[in-house]
Image (cartoon, rainbow, N blue to C red; front, side, top):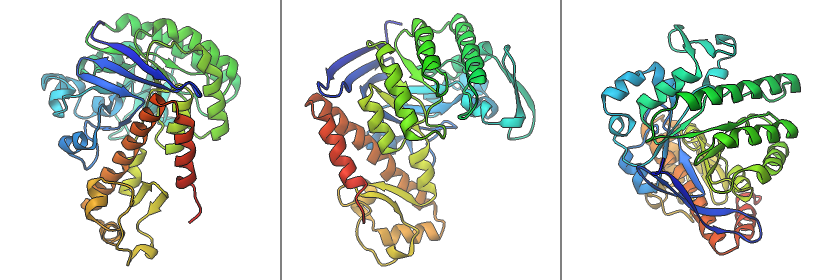
Length: 372
């Protein structure tokens, strides 16, 4: 695993937020970083060249979806995900655990693994820690996630504990099945919204963490105050010498609050999903461009943004595209939203290096949440 290492460049003396570099076989990643999600080996509506122009350092793909279509064996025959999707920078694949557990009645969980019905055609499949490792090996991402059970927000402590313990057992099996030294396995902290379980989970999984640890099961419907408390509670127990990855977080406030609590990496489908629904994140809050008030608004989407969308098009034009269901609407708004979040974390990195992260966050909130 010598191709992976994490270097802390600076720790903000007021908040403890970290700026660093994560070295991987396909390049360095400056942290903290937001990672766009390409579920099916593509970030919807965007070319790889466009993503590079936006400053994307690392992409995510989804094991569950790629296992079903086209099949990890097909991806392996193509030379792995990097060649298959023509992306020569780092890639992370999740384990598919969250997607499987989101299937509800379509899946059955046992200690052996999860039996589930495909959401595509109803065919039966089983994921085990060993089979997931094989699939992720075939996909060939730089960073791969352990198979875990993400318990539902609101479940009782007995179930949360059982899911956490199963996650730990599966992690041990993943670690034994993981044989590819070109890939870094991240273990995942679970424990739902119970502090003692979360701390117990961190203490267990950190022994399996070689150069990265993930926090799962947050941002799943709980109030933000509870999420922040869980992060505060586990922070003292996270290993300092490796990246901390908060899974499934993509709103500006969650990203910034995570960074303040020692998070280095986060991801979410949110920026591209809301783009396809006609919504943009801007310096002054969300803009729903389909709204009638933008019909004759010939100003840029965000006057503080220099992305391709904001440099060349107006809210009136974007509203027209959205209401006509033109593909270009999704592309332009996706360009803007991803660029917006990448710029947000870039600014955070610089603020951390200047010991001014708290001021950066406060100033961002003052504009983002101002009353229009």
